[in-house]
Amino acid sequence: MSFVTASEPKPLIVLTGSDAINNSSFNIKGSWNDSIAPTAGRDYTAAQYIMRTPSSGGSMTFAGDSLTLPLLSGIRYKGGNNQTITIPQLIFDGGTIDVGNASCAFTLAGQVEVRSDSIIWPQNDTTRSINIAAAIRGAGNLNLGNGGTGTVQLSGDNSSFTGKIDVNGGTTLRIAMAQHLGLSLIHISEPTRPRL
Image (cartoon, rainbow, N blue to C red):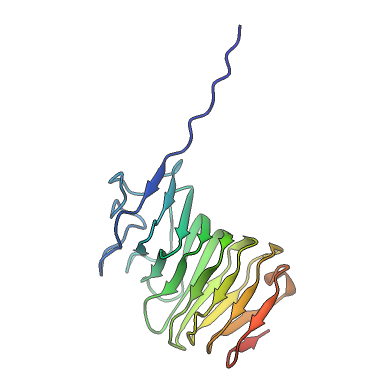
């Protein structure tokens, strides 16, 4: 007689509070409910809280297998200019990613899945920008700008993304090739400035 063993489900680790100024849960135990720094083999959710990236240390990778951003949650980039944060599987499920420093640009690498309407927000400052180099897939909608005036660049292969892209406020959208838009419909609200 042979036995088939079911694999154990990966634990879901939950952020229990927003990161305070000069604190981060991106690569240390921070506010995670297991009191351990993010680790491979585990999935993470920001619940309804804001996770800050570290303010120093250069480019870095989130060590967990995935990070979900539900409604009211988000990632606030607080690192240096022209750095890259890599998240193996970032799941937008109503959450936000934004730039927390003036005169700052950063790149988001890895994979992005958009499950429900979510926001990429460079904030209300023309000196802030986000380059989404991660491949985007999914059918949820992306609000680029959220009424802000920064720049969002799509530079990954987003051919599996079928949601709508809503560019609004004074946000500048930059793309270089059609595949960066995927199969999405684009809605541009004045006075935004698309740059193709």
